Image (cartoon, rainbow, N blue to C red):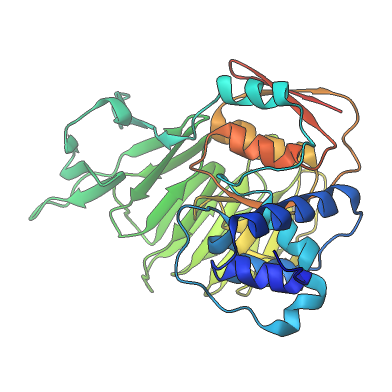
Amino acid sequence: MKKLKPEELIHNYVNDTASEEERIILESWHLQELKNSTYIPSQEHITIVHKRMWEKLTSHTHLQKPTVVSEKLWPGIAVTAAVFLIISATIYIYIKPISQSSVIILTQNDVAAAGNKATLTLGNGEKILLQQTNKELVAIQDGINIRKSNGSLIYEQQKNTKGTSVINKLETPRGGKYQLILPDGTKVWLNSASILTYPSTFKGKERSVSLEGEAYFEVAKDKEKVFKVLSKTQTIEVLGTHFNIKSYKDEHEIQTSLAEGKVKVSNGLQYKILNPGQAAFTDGNSKTIKIENTDLEKDLAWKNNDFIFKGDNLRSIMREVSRWYDVEVIYEGNFNEARYFGVVSRSKNISEVLKMLQLTGKINFKIEGRRITLMN
């Protein structure tokens, strides 16, 4: 094989013209480069690689039509590409930063990704496990039809009836998710370990719901009725817009990220107006609302069925992983300093996420049932 420059190897790989020998060299080189380097890729390179190379580097067997990457990117792309190479679910590993026994532990004791699981509590207290019922029409409640369709729970008011409003609750367990369409047409994506409390139909001059956990809202426009989301330390008010709220008990702050429109965020003492691309942060100890520009791709990754890590610490990552896979996490060692970058589909088994992190060479994992032990 003729000796190729690094940029030529990458070009061939991305365009699906590399020989098997070239692939082996490229992958081994990139992985070793990442393992031995302290270089942290820039945000610009991460974004470029994510958009242009991710689909090309996730699988040897499912490569799509190549996307040409500008040659201007070559000088700094090698290690950045390695970050995304190591998170591939089906990539072959030709170096050995992980012991063979560790790989066996990961693959023999695996945990599947979360699925459509939720419990609906009706106004009369009746509980319905949505994953266990095959009925399309789940319930009829005071002139409201509640039905399942394509993984969503839909509220529809019967014709020629006004319906009495009663309080309902949709609760996803750890390892579960669900989508809800409220009677006004508002769409809600509920993440794992979350609870949404809401009326079966909206009466009066406002539409008010309560959230514990995480949810993404696409609020139906209604100039006559403000839509409110109540969480632990925030109240969100909108007329019609798209936003995400992360309000878990085990997270230090509540974060509201705005994707479209405008929202009013208040904490009982003050309020701030959010613009698209901004996030509001509050906690139980502060009397102020902190506004920052945010990374919407990262904030909304869960809704798009991805994990995206951009400089996250391990404990933050594992809180998210533990909710999604319904696992307990045990730490044996000090993991306070390390930061991680990567993207992996949330539809993969937990072993794929753990392998991605383990390839840094700084951590090892052991899976025992639903207990994950991290060691360094």
